[in-house]
Amino acid sequence: MTYKIAVIPGDGVGPEVVREGLKVLDAVSKIYNLKFDFKTYPFSGEHYLKTGEILPEDALKEMENMNAIYFGAIGHPEVPPGILEKGLLLKLRFYFDQYINLRPVKLFPGVETPLKDKGPKEINFYVVRENIEDFYVGVGCKFKSAKHKSNLFVERKLYKLNFKVETLTEKPIETAYQIGVYTKENIQRVFRYAFEFCRKKGLNKLTCVDKANVLTEIYGLWREVFMEVSKDYPGIETEFGFVDAVAMWFVKNPENFQVVVAPNMFGDILTDLGAIIQGGMGLAPGGNINPEGVSMFEPIHGSAPKYAGKNVANPIAAILAGQLMLEHLGEVEAAKAIEKAVTEVLVEGKIRTKDLGGNSTTSEVGDAIAKKIR
Image (cartoon, rainbow, N blue to C red):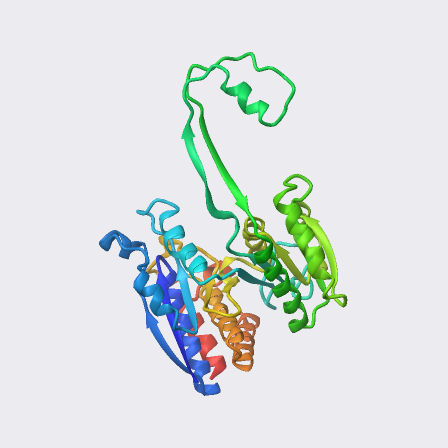
């Protein structure tokens, strides 16, 4: 079959690393007799500044007929934070109900980790992050309250604290709140995906992350549903970990993890930590997955505008995002070929970008990996 792929190179180094990812996909397609129909979209910070358009509805409708989305990076120095992230990246995740963010945390042979005495055998696990709820649902507000001498007292009374505030305020108090939201139905399917992913990969341990000791309502539900779903998977060992403890164990004993399932915000933070222990952002791919719909694959690094156009960015994360995409599409052997080629190039150590201690260009890395496949 022909796979229809929407390509959104985005901003900064995004177009450069996506170019190398497409180069590798082209190489593997010839060996494994795959056909791709790539359609490139211009949506980016530069496009927004020129046109005022971020992501139109007709493009979303068109992408509904695609097999997957291949994404570069988003973020432009002249666009305020949040506009592109919410209007493009999060909009895609929500529109296509990509409720899973899948992040392999894998240290490749030949790559250094900042963790002492750890190697590829110790750093090789997955993070399944809930991707569309939690504190990312956009429920919140920022406001200035009216001048009110008892304002501070009222704020504290809400939390039933038993003391009186003597200080009077003559100025409006600036206040902000952000509400985290979880629905049982959504987190049920996240946990089922995580358990089924364990089975698919032949793994038998699942670690559930939360902060139920303090944020008892939202993560209390998270934990309760996890325990309910786990009853259907008696062959898989389960454990709980508070997010602060899990961050510590990522550094101290990463070998203890096989699959980690985490709420959206905590997963966002933990996966950046995972990227560093696997050698850096330039090696970290991610998948935004709807198992029954259109999924999106991307390097997790940002747009790095100061490196844009210099042909120095590491394209391996984008290339491995293509590998994740192929695996998701069921092209397992082709996906393995990409991972094998990446491994061989890293082990040889002759071709590597500056972030890995070399001086090769973005193009040279893509060429070397494509050549290995051929």
